[in-house]
Amino acid sequence: MSTKTFITDNFLLENKYAEELYHSYAKDQPIIDYHNHLPPAQIAADTQFENISKVWLAGDHYKWRAMRTLGINEKFITGDASDKEKFEAWGKTVPHTLRNPLYHWTHLELKRYFGIEELLNEKNASSIYENVNAQLQQKENSCRGLLNKMNVETLCTTEDPTDNLKHHQTIKEQNIGVKVSTAFRPDKSILIDADGYTDYLKELGKVAEIDIQSFQDLKDALLKRIQYFDENGCKLCDHGLNSMSYEEFTEAEVNAVFKSKLAGKEISFGDIEKFKTAILLFLGETYHQYGWVQQFHLGALRNNNKRMLAQLGPDTGWDSIGDYNQAEKLSKFLDTLDGKDKLTKTILYNLNPSDNEIFATMIGNFNDGSVKGKVQLGSGWWFLDQKDGMERQMNALSNMGLISCFIGMLTDSRSFLSFPRHEYFRRVLCNLFGKEIASGELPEDMELVGKTISNICYGNANDYFNF
Image (cartoon, rainbow, N blue to C red):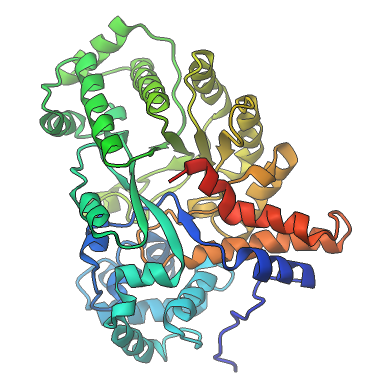
């Protein structure tokens, strides 16, 4: 039985055309990772990780879900087991992840960062743990070293409006060779129906130096934080919403809803929608004013397991795909901004694959010729950032729009070991085009197709974000 990796030079590349596209046009392109959740504090400190569990397993709810499915006790996932025991539990799990993208990612990451050619399993987990831990103590495998290994040129983390951005300021002063920016994530100010909303307003008000007692106060506070983020180099925002809100409203109605919330009163669903619409439109217009790119991640059904949410908190692996009605309200939201000529560059990420064509056609409604690819269908994310999900997203985009304008992949990850996902995407992309060259559906013009590939991998994002 072979224990050597299957991650060969031509992994996922099914013919000579795919191989040439990948090796000549995709492989060596720098990485622009324009959306992730990496902790800037660790980049600023150039953290040297004690062991692989701390950089690879901590916070990775993809792995956690797989381990739970296999019957691994929570003690060895998020509990008080040692880091080595947690890694050994992951090693036991890996052979059971066949046909899950985790199997591919695991072995890509072990090989690319640490030169590990073995297939991880229960028997060799301990020795691989010790091998990698020794390598992690080398300077080349610090946070910044790991980024440099993957040819990361630019990355964009995600911060709440209350963040003081001190770590980004430190990184900028250090001139580390990788451009690190931030994205403004104001969801806590939008989700008026969420627990702890009024407590959050006090925190936001303190940072903005505004006593938030009205809807106008809230807008003023957010505007001050947008100005602060912009002064610190921010050029993107991000929103994680189930679906877009849109309900006709008046300013008086929204202020009354806000006052009711502050008074601890119950708010109807219709009033919640009015408030969310008002704040999102205000933010959208402000992003346009500052020339930012706005991102909307739509379609997740979060925190389904209330028992485990109470024990572990959010973002610990209890989310799934939702089945919301997306088209009409999303259209009205974008159209309202466009009607005022205040629709900024926009990226829409879809989590439900049955909605791919809805999103792919929606972007065409608002690409007005002012900017190449102004409104984008974002890459397959979360449950869809695997081979099938990527192909379905790219096929929908190709059929309904122009894949040649696509700004490509991002990690959306909390791990410094996740950047081979760009390689994974590039291989899938090149194979998709290579198969159609072989079948005669695309011309055997490697310069033409290769330019398209290199633009999707790097050039389009470089032009779009202008970091």
